[in-house]
Image (cartoon, rainbow, N blue to C red):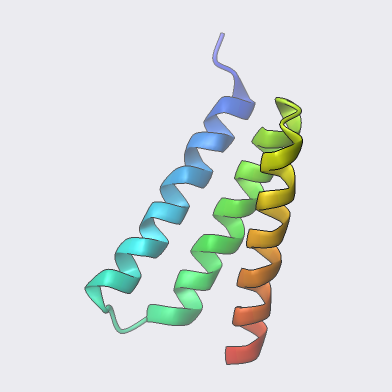
Amino acid sequence: MIDIILILGGIGLILIILGVIVKRRGFKETRRNQDLYYIFGGIFLLIYSISIKNYIFIVLQLLFILAALWDYKKRK
């Protein structure tokens, strides 16, 4: 059976990679969409890290999400 938590972690990783690609390619949508990729990717990875009980990664993801939210709100 496929583990849904592992799939969510994979989706989170892909979203964060897309955020990096958007930034490097300089697409028109750039910064706000990049922040959205980071926020949702971070949330999915947070769910994954909670499921595996990796407390260091949980703290890292919380800080990552908060930083992306801060940047998103600042640009609104």
